[in-house]
Length: 478
Image 1 (cartoon, one colour):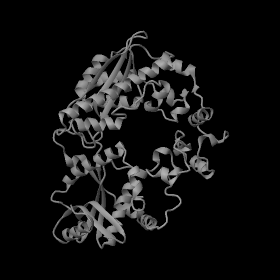
Image 2: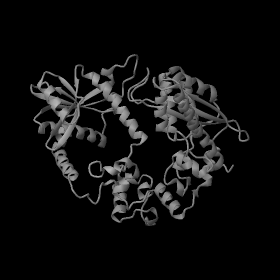
Image 3: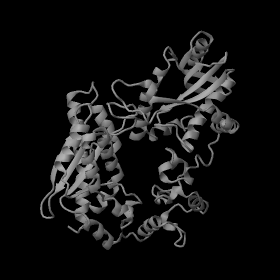
Image 4: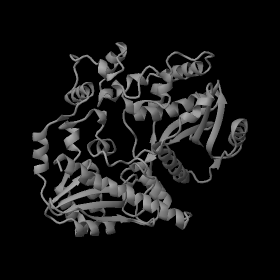
């Protein structure tokens, strides 16, 4: 699309999550470069970058960042190349922002990146020695100054690259031929054979026959290749057209039935049993966290969550209104101790802590206890009190056609409690909240902007915990 239909590119904007991944990747690469002291950065672009790379390789430069090659109709910009142990060879290093060497398809993507670069370098007459992946060490825990040698692990992936070499070369030539087509192919992508979460940015353009809400939105449909292929082969795109006799899982079947009937499916008995197991006081609780690839504070490892904010609505009994307390870390320092102290203070051993997606909150509490051993028992005690309100929807005790298969609180709230919504809020979802907190606490952020962001963060997190209270009330018929 960028090559042949540039007028469409603006409609394929990056999401907040995409931007977050790019920023994290840049931070990881900046730190990983410290593993190669004396390396020279190729700062030019285009043909000038290729020429500068050739000049550096011909000289006595030992390692090069962003070495650039154009050969055989392919273009490659390498994270790092370094002179190999064998004279005349160069080793490749691909820097990845992952927390360990990945397995399965993600690892294959990493190997493919290396393999592509190796082919292009060989087309350019370069003899490649070893091909390596540089990734974060998930066992690393920061203590004092960042230890870059311990933070990263270098994995020799030469054998894996060589094993994929022949097939990858075929793919490269096929891709080049595809990009050079004068007439646009009828099918721009094969994402129609995947669930909605794995669709590419140009999916709607490439598949205009498939509506915004389609069979691709049926819960977990992408996990069954056979099911999605059958639906596509039969050109069944609309959920209403899914045959009644077609075999689906229980959750999938409930979603389809609710959509076809345009009526809710509610198991009152199951809902009453779950809500009846809650004991007062009720604590409606929500965290906001930021998980930097590069640990910012002592006691943290790569991608360990910083609990920079929480909101807590406490309901003492069924007749009173909830009391609200909140916490927001206003500077870039470790909030762990403050959070642990406040939670221990405000959440009594008696009562139920109600969250939305318990593995997240429990995981943050567990990490707090691991960093502060003196609060480990308190965090474990609170985790024992945690109950997941989302279970009512995830376990299909309440299915509504307007949920569209989602159990996100952002989708459930406006259906169950129509007077409440995240629409119009400055911050509407967790990734944006994380990024905004990181921006708010940056050294160069002006005071006025800090205040604006802080207000938006408080409003967002407060609605998250209040939304659970409001949904709980509505489920009880209040």
